[in-house]
Image 1 (cartoon, rainbow, N blue to C red):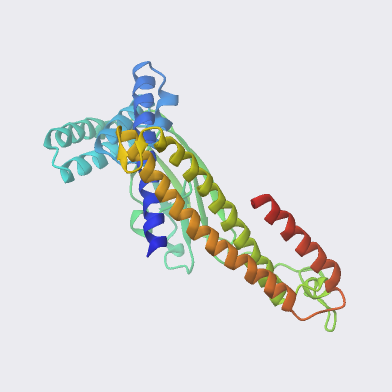
Image 2 (image 1 turned 45 degrees about the vertical axis):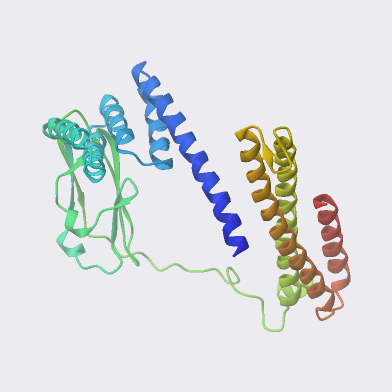
Length: 320
């Protein structure tokens, strides 16, 4: 329960940081857009929307796409903004978004992917446009597309892949890509010895190195412990720093400034996380060492054991 509460606190602070970052990126994107720097503005608004989805950000992003000549992207983003605005009860913003989408609709260019009838029903057939899968219901349909170059790829198991590039130029244009029947691929011949396992009776690289399953488990468990100890130490240092900050404004439980209360709460939260991680890390590291020392011994284990324990000692010294 304590661990869940600690990590919930960390997650809440991370979300708060995402919100602040999203607002900063949104402000930067609007400034760049107002200054005419469209190419720089759109990525800022995209990242802001990813961090904190908002209908207002969507409308500005759609406007950025429109000014960049990406009309299909602008049209679909306006519609997405209208849906989000309706869900949030912002009728005025919904109306604006739908009106702008409707104004763009006659200007949209389209791309049709015409698939050969023989390909329908072919097991494992997958068709992608610019890396995005195009399902069978969309085959032969005039799909809104941004101006510029587009790549259509089709592939199926046991068949040669098909690839084509097409350019959509201007507004209200329609381009077509015809996907033909795919040719059967030639069976590949693997040279003798290539990709084959070790001959019968020959030890595998893992066996020759002496690292059996127990030693691998020991290394993994010990590494997890070292990482947990390192992170726990970092939270401990952060807790101490925030405790010192709180002491500037508080005397015991009495605080003369809200900054002291905030710093004190943060110090307690970080301290709890540090305690949990140090306990988990210590147990995991001790378990890893025990597994290593109790693993079945092999003639080639000595160098590996010395190296593994040596690395573990160096890591622990670094953490503490």
